[in-house]
Image (cartoon, rainbow, N blue to C red; front, top):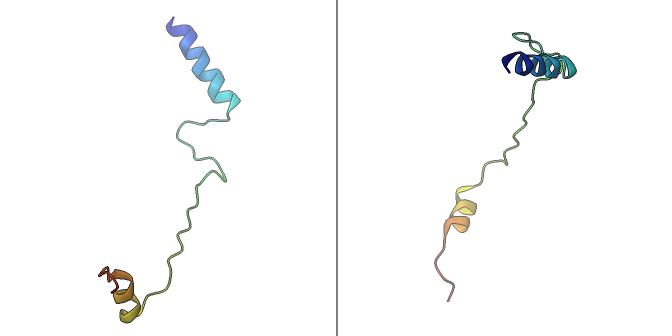
Length: 54
């Protein structure tokens, strides 16, 4: 059974161009996080204020 499992692993690596220990070119993930600009203290107070309006 081990021989068949190893063969499947090797075949899968070959089909997907997987190389052990070598990074693939262009495969790096890129994450961009855009943050809004800072709020003024007055705008923040309006946002945080949860008192009911009368």
